[in-house]
View (cartoon, rainbow, N blue to C red):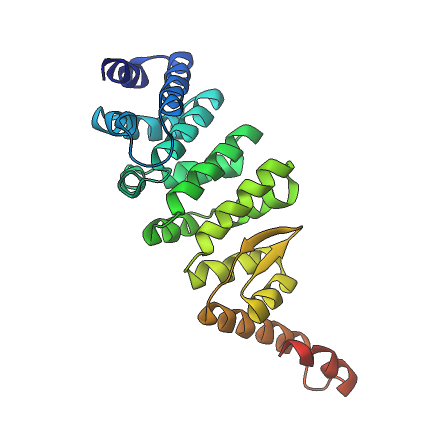
Length: 236
């Protein structure tokens, strides 16, 4: 596709304003087609070498260019297993997490969306995203952002926790003690009416219960009165 080749060329050679405009145009091309799944537009962007250039833009572009590039990477990864791998292999995860941590409000929302799409159905990306430090800034979005962004942060956390016991426990730890209790008891964690861990398995429940028991035992010495010990008994 000639227009895609031209837009990718701008991503490589244009100034910051032109690069942001090119990323916006690439997203609009996908939007006019179909964002989810495999599309000729997504394939053409990848074949033209657009993915590494978009990653560079998320890492080093202007504030405006960063969120446009993050949105394009999220769209490329949406519903497409092959593209999830390609985007991760191009090194997108660390700069997306950095954008999630330090970007503008709109950039944080787009980074969360992109990370959600990268994590969905991809075990390796779930591990990489958590290892890059995404869980704490996602929880901060969940706590402080506007309702629509909170919902997106919740979706991203659920994607990270799905079939991943370590991430489920790490998310509960980030949310707090009561979240660990929720996870141990039900396999679910909800914060401010947003579910962030859904239907975690027995290993995650057991790990959460061990963390709860350790915290409680460390905080209540053997010499404590029986009444105090009785208060923590329901959690053990």
